[in-house]
Length: 182
Length: 104
Length: 85
View 1 (spheres, helix red, strand yellow):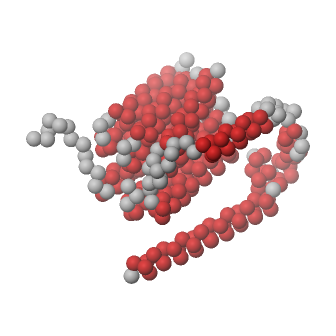
View 2 (cartoon, rainbow over the protein chains, first blue to last red):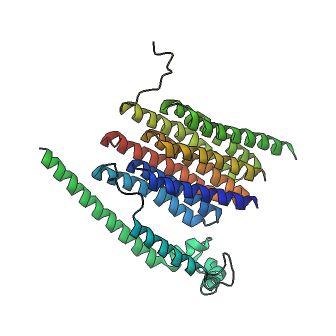
View 3 (cartoon, rainbow over the protein chains, first blue to last red):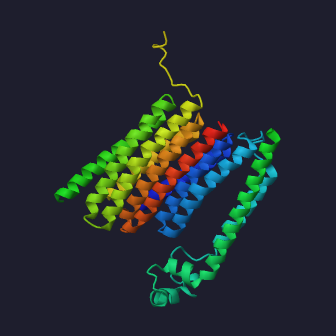
C-alpha cells in the first residue's frame, strides 16, 4: 500500500516534469528538466526492480544525453522560436497514436504473470543452466555478455563508429569556424 | 527495539527533517546565492544522516562499506559541485541580492 | 516502515527542488536544483534497496553519485565558456 503511494507520487513528479519541459521557453531549462525527468524515470525503474534498465537510464539519460543536448544548444542558440501552444494536427496524431497504443496494451499479459509468453520460451533454460554454462552469477549479465555476446559486440562497434564519426564531423565544423574568424 | 535501531531511527528522522528543510530553503530563499546554502550544506548533512542510519541497520557487511563509500563521495562532491555553480554564476555576472533597507 | 517514511520525506524534498527547477529564474537555479535532485536520487535508491530487502541496489546509487557530479560539471563548463545564459 505505502509502496503503491510512493510509486504514484513518483509518477506524479514525472508528469509535472514532462509538462514543465514542454511548456518552458528556454531550451537550456528544458534540457535540465529532461535531466530531472530521466533521474525520476530511473527511480521508477529501480522501484520496479529493473536494476539493469535503471543503470542504462542513469548513464544515458541523466549523463550523456544531457551533455549532448547542451553541446547542441551551443550550435543552435538557446531560445525556442515562438510557436502556438497547441499545433492541432500533431495533437490529433499524438492522441490517436496514444489511443491505439493503450488499446494494444489491453492484450498484453498482466505485470509479473509467470504464464506470459516471454517467460515460457528461453527464459526457463537461462534460469536453469546459465550458471553452469557461462559461470556468470547474474542472469541478465549472462544473457547480454554470453548468450548474445556477438550482438553486444557489434552493438558496441556500431556505437563506437558513430561516436568516432561525430567527433570527426564536429572537429571539422570547429576548424572551419576558426578559419572564418581569421 | 535495541540501541542501534533507536539510534538509526533518530538519525533517519533528523535526516528527513534536514532534507525537507533544504527543499523549503531552496524554494523560499530570495535569490540564487542564498539558495546555495540550502542546496549545499543542508543537503550534504541530510544525505550523510540518512545513509548513516542505513549503515547502522545493515551491520558490518559489504553493504556498509558501499554506503560508507557513497557518503564519503557525496560529502566530497556536493560541496564541490555547489562551489562550481557559484563560481560560474559569479563569473557570468550574477549580482547578489540585497535587502532594500541596507541599500543606503 | 521506517524506510518508507524516509522515502516519502525524500520524495517531498524532490518535489520542492522540482518546483525551483520549474520556476527558475536563472539557469544556475535550475542547475543547482538538478544537482540537488541527483543527490536525493542517490539517497532514495539506497532507501528503495532497503525497502525491497535488496541492498545490492547500492551499486546503482554509487553510479548515480558519480554521474550526477560529472554531468553537473559538464553542463557548467558549457554554460561558463560558451555564454549559454
